Length: 459
Image 1: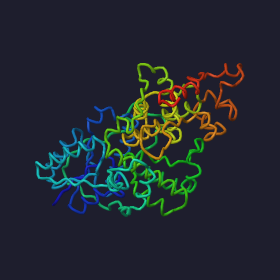
Image 2 (image 1 turned 60 degrees about the vertical axis):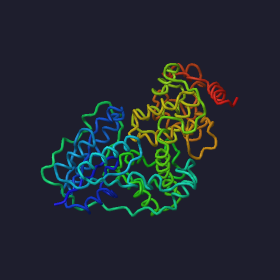
Image 3 (image 1 turned 180 degrees about the horizontal axis):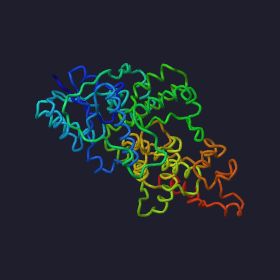
Image 4 (image 1 turned 90 degrees about the vertical axis):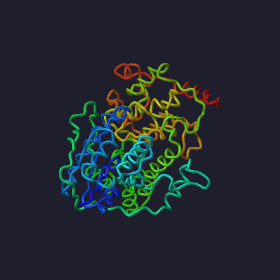
């Protein structure tokens, strides 16, 4: 009997899974393995919301494997050590995993290649599992990556994606392979009350529902804060419970402006991956420096605390920050708003905001989180020809939450304020203001704009 190991990482699914497909084709028996790495905890990256969602994903993956005659083997410890131990226990001749581009993923692959090589176990790393198009597969003439989204999207759209792979019918796991208990969401403290259920099953059901009712309207409604018309699939993509390639295929099959707009958003993920693959330092340093002297924790502590708690006095900002805390998720338009407010109105370092997002976002990952923050701060990549643009929360609220429904949903102190008045509660009559347990604006928008312009040398 030949045996192969499949190391699951950010690809917690059975549908469209090239490493699993290759392992089943190459060997008689396969060990589906997930390693709980203490290095993730040491790096401060296993935030409660993601840890709970991961537990759901692993339990769902195990259930799907058991329906096919297999099971998920869970081990805890350094990844290379545990993979080598499993390979030795079952006599595996090869290990398959999805390629990753973060510094952590690169280090993991290097250690695996080194330690497995010492045991004459082959390591097969599969591209285009976590993304639709592998980083580096599409490059500009004379460069190693695209720094601007639009030309990347044109080239990306010309790429022929592989046909999505069906989930296997049978997975045979060797007898006697030891594994630890599956983690349980119930054991994770400090999660957001509105955190969704994780796992491939939940993700596929969510996409199917949304594809029937929301995909066709996505182009027109994706910025509607109160309408909540986005797919909410980002957590499932982050954990690989859904295949981005399969989402692109299924969306293109339906066709129409909504599907095209959604595919464009999937492409943004790939764009960011190819940027960080070429410029790994962009996870912590400005991609394009503006020589900012950002305010830090020591001189902006009260402003940062008010922003984190949703007590800035600007209702649209506060609503978004409270949604983040309650759900572990935030509407993309709202992410842009609150990031602009922190970096350009309060002039606080984008890394402070990015860290807070990573503490709470169930879809938080180094690639998309850091580079989106850089885009808003005006230090990053993309299509933005106006890196000094400031998103005015009053204007944005009027445009994307015109009747204040989103604000009243998340800021109950303002639930009694009618219509558009909710955007500027400080303009209410004094008697009405006194009845509201809501703070005055943290800063005058004009003052924030003047400070930002001066800092960027544009006054």
